[in-house]
Amino acid sequence: MMLSDLDGLLHGVICSPIPISSDVWMAAGLGAELKELPEWVVNTLTDRYMEIAQGLAHDPMVVEPIFWQAKEGHVIAMDWCEGFMKAVGLNPKEWLRLSESGKDGHLMTPILLHMIDEQGNSMMGITQDQLDKALFQASEVIPDSVARIYLY
Image (cartoon, rainbow, N blue to C red; front, side, top):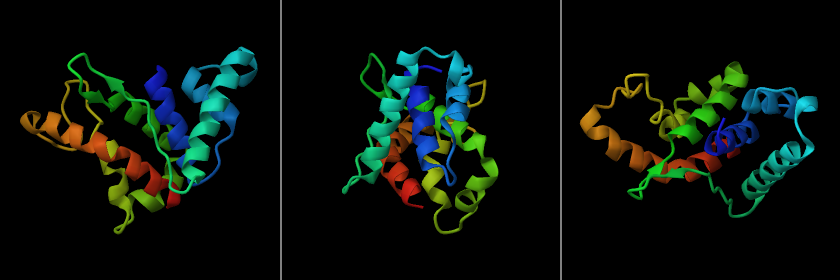
């Protein structure tokens, strides 16, 4: 995983309906056992984890995802969203209560809108001519969605 993906994973881990141990999410994010990782890597990820957790515990909440920025200036949130969804995949059954909620299931929509197949097509069925606009709008509301998912 790159930086944006890892940041999304950490946000997803912190928002998880059940706790996920650091050895599980570090292995998912870095592909290595916790004991195999250099101490500075573990410390850096732990520091970012704590920064995110403290932001979500703050009043008002502070959610500052690390998104890429294209040379043209627009935000690219796709990698971050893929990282978040990887965290969801660590305990998919636990996330069903939210995703199947008639009242709050929409909170995942800005993240799910960024899921693209190998051909570059939206997995949510958004047409190519509408995709850039939809992704921009979705990326704008991700911080608020994450805060609300955390509260859920």
